[in-house]
Image 1: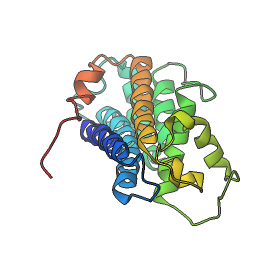
Image 2: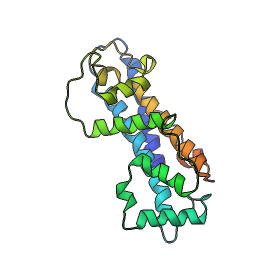
Image 3: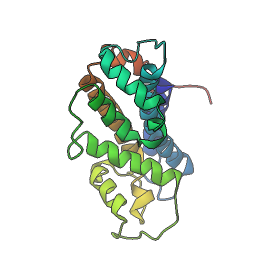
Image 4: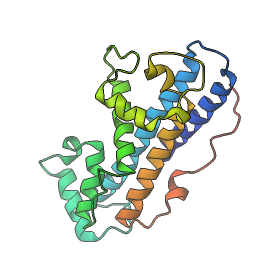
Length: 220
């Protein structure tokens, strides 16, 4: 499902860009446009979930397929298997980004620096997904934002904001647009590719996960 989730995210980002181009003189909320942006964010994080779970599950299986873990030493696979299947239930206890970091440690590699890119962006992306899925109404008018939205605004700069002439509040009116959708896709791909290389995995990343161009017309 990882490649499907990523295709969906990229497809929705493309559709969001097309829709936004049609709304450049429209100051009204367009739910179709916002839906494309939200779906791109949700699917981009779903890709990361499916991507890392496939690696851990391959390591955890008693007779792994070895496709997703090719390049990981046997002793590292044994450690991952124990963590994933053991009584501590790492599968349930680890956060999404922790599953990436712990796998690197198991394989004897350095963790991705949490204070630098691409970790910083993917951390904000996961927070955005959680914010959307577990949304709680709150006031956030003008330039007063909860801490998380302040971090998001550092990523969704003016160049990436919704280009419609739409006003406050910044979130969701300006934040959720084609620029955010593109950023979500770019962030998830960059982080997954960086981790893939850091783990020393030997299967080709693009051939496995970026399977086709999503920017093609389809019948409604």
